[in-house]
Length: 349
Image (cartoon, rainbow, N blue to C red; front, top):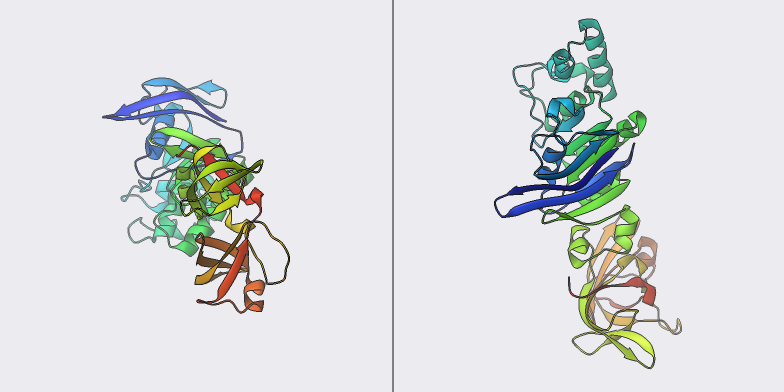
């Protein structure tokens, strides 16, 4: 378990103030833009920076004033911070050697961790010349050798290509579940976060703006900033009004859509996965938008469809449906979405 209460630290004009709780055996991913304080938070949790205020608990121990070596945290910094003068085996076993673990026991543990991460064939190699993926695995093995129930990962796969990044993320998730670790994993990519996260936190200017499961955040992002972090499209401005006893949102061009929204200026999201194609003669549908296809992109079993019309919309529809309708650039299209597809942020965020 990891718990921080009003944890504060300042650098110049930037200040960090975070309250956070990560359960035992929970994988928590921290997302945020560059400069939001993600690395600073990890460094404060593991003791590399002394908190100016607040408290930190790891398990049942308060470690706010403890030295890094006494916190028993596995920490993987962005660059891995591997020792170039040691072999792979020497790097993995470094913490064990510092703790004076007997040689035979240490060697057995190094072998076990190397096998777990698929780097047993590299144990005699020097760090120089290893690939990015191999270095990431060595850094992770060294952190796991600390036998800590807490693991802090700062951009652990940032240097990898897309395929290798996914493979390593799945390996980390498997290890976390197998060992029952409490993990905080920092990254920029929501796609990366979705591979591993039980919960996600959005950090903005040193403050946690929203936390929740990936599904919860996608369904109801707290602000347009969160929506951008999650790479959600179809974010618009409008004005909430009441007409005929019904709540509506009026766009700047005068077009109105049926949706539950507060009165006054609002920004809102139309969930792309709730948008449907409406064929001629299909009967009455809510919030119908007519336009032409300006972009169409195949994404596995789905197609990302962009139309320009009364309001520009991006929809994710089944590939078979796009094929059946022979949709292509320039095709006319009618899209529809229910009121429940609209999520209003309220006042401009």
